[in-house]
Image (cartoon, rainbow, N blue to C red; front, top):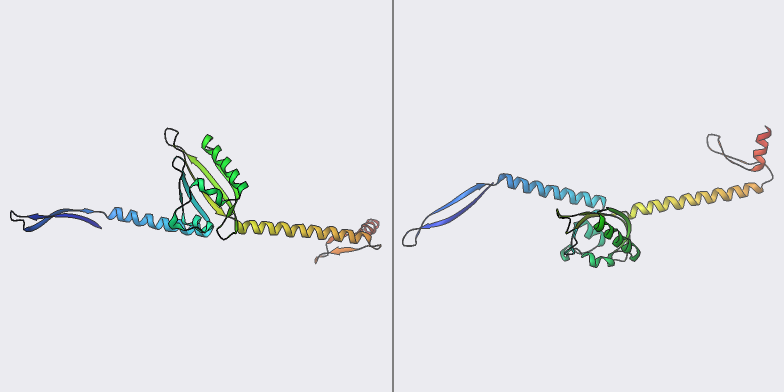
Length: 212
């Protein structure tokens, strides 16, 4: 790759008689630009796959930058730009926004990073469970804080955790119910698995086994 500049050379009559200029080899710069584009494309793909968006916030100017994935999570128009921090209470559940504000205040005051689970409010009315992380960076004079972080949509993971918890609770409830039923049976009852191992026994059966 080469970049050239030139200006026309004119004679005394103003007629163009030639061009003089310079050329510069910009191969290294073009290669660096292409590598950056590829890296950004890979980052965008990774964020999309993991449902993780990244952001940056200049506290002094309340200027916020979002990656494309954050716009997708909140279903907002990329062309309108990222909402300022002052506008973000409309993006989160009020209780979660209060916790976020407290975490941000602590981060700015003392540099402590934060990690919070939050409920994001989308434009379609859906609530998405998200994991928010942030850290503060100061300039060399210790002023003009900037915050950087990420927001990951963990809704599916939360749903799986809730499903497992509900299933576990149902199994425990069924086990208690079975124990209550077995306790009323006047004869010994054993519940065995496929290998013949005892899974459950009522009081009468336990007594019979003790005698044996």
